[in-house]
Length: 144
Ligand code: THU
Image (cartoon, rainbow, N blue to C red):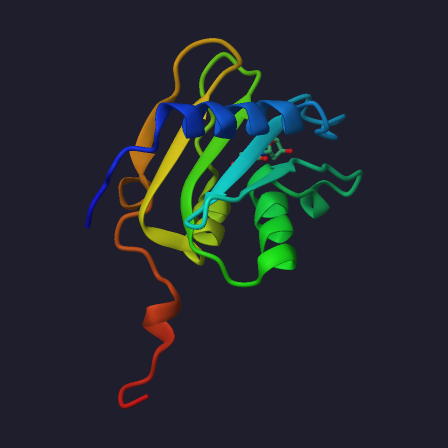
């Protein structure tokens, strides 16, 4: 597996996309806006923000919305990098459910970045974030 770096210019674009969509977050209950931007292997960027709901469990995470935008536009697409932006006092790594959602479309060498509005991003490989994951390959039946 080759974990080559994302170029500085592309990373800046991805961060800007995550921070821009953060402003559209609908988070009247948690007051914790989140923005997510996904870079596809083909170089496209898709954005999502969290969308909360008065019936709390019906709320959507930013990553889920970004994946929805990507799949609704391009169908099944491998992700090269994900960037999660928040306004909190510590960076926000994807929640457990969103790690599983990302796993479905994670490219072979996917990076996950996170940062607050100020400061440099932290990053991890997706397999550091979700080791020993259960994914599409696990559902393949022997001989199929
Ligand atoms: N949230 C996300 O959008 N992504 C995550 O990975 C972590 C949590 C949202 C859900 C909720 O609207 C708010 O952050 C507080 O949990």
